[in-house]
Length: 342
Ligand SMILES: NC(=O)c1ccc[n+]([C@@H]2O[C@H](COP(=O)([O-])OP(=O)(O)OC[C@H]3O[C@@H](n4cnc5c(N)ncnc54)[C@H](OP(=O)(O)O)[C@@H]3O)[C@@H](O)[C@H]2O)c1
Image (cartoon, rainbow, N blue to C red; front, side):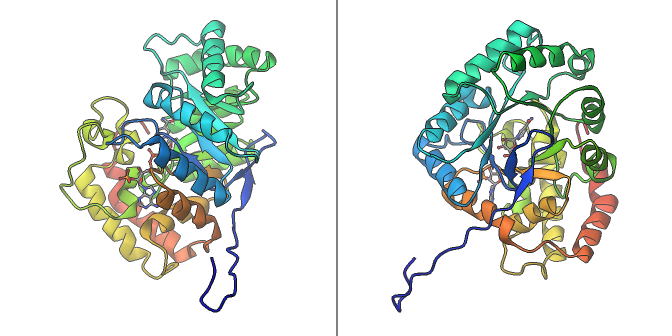
């Protein structure tokens, strides 16, 4: 950017990297959630906007992208794959498998086929990280899926694997019974139980935490009013009460109108924190203030959201008072409202 007086101002990119468990990867503490550029969030995000959002994120220092084989039936992976070919720096792509069909059986052939298909869509020889995508708890506990993943890893199709889980119990099980390098969990101001029940164990065992749904599907940006109507093809409409999948994935399980009210309370409590920052940034900062988190992956539909989210790495941590106030708010008024598997 050139200032009026002819002096060129160089924008300093601040993006802190953190280690992702025992993977050896140093990932940007703010990543990019790529569900939005697949489907399920209302009007389809054009390929052009998706590329702009991805470029904005990477220009701001993001090197970690979270996608899945089922986002838009492969559209998200394909867009990310095309994007990878436009950039020279090393970018880590985490994808997911295990929800493509009802009968997904976790056997070696099934896991290998899914990995091959994701490699093809992403245009890579091997997946940096593949995560089991909230598969049934019984399948996790049976253990065969981890044997399959190990064999596929030995074949060189995947470099590391992790698990995206719905409940704290599932997370603890994976830490104790698998070689998963990462756990992906719903973690935001509306979902605080993991702070005491999961994060310390993950930290001790060096399992990286990937924080999903950090803005409670947008509620924690504070820009929605009660009664807001989302379009029919937006999961914030068709899954607002868990009609199609775990209600926790939509608004973190908090009923929408109550969530709007609570976002207002959060905003009031944070009014003196990083005063210039919008609530979305403060909410993401809250997630990053937890050391066990390797990366937070807000979903973004456009370049503005992507760069605003990435910039959170450069803002000051919230005060201890703010954390304590938000903890009290959660304990007294939010925990009892959270629906779904937890
Ligand atoms: N089971 C799983 O493994 C699973 C489940 C859910 C999500 N995920 C992953 O986690 C990622 C993040 O979760 P999520 O996308 O569900 O929820 P989220 O990150 O909490 O919310 C994303 C939404 O917040 C709004 N937003 C984003 N940046 C904003 C900003 N700077 N200012 C104002 N609003 C902003 C946008 O809403 P608008 O669309 O209204 O603009 C966006 O669609 C996903 O993209 C996906 O990669 C994984």
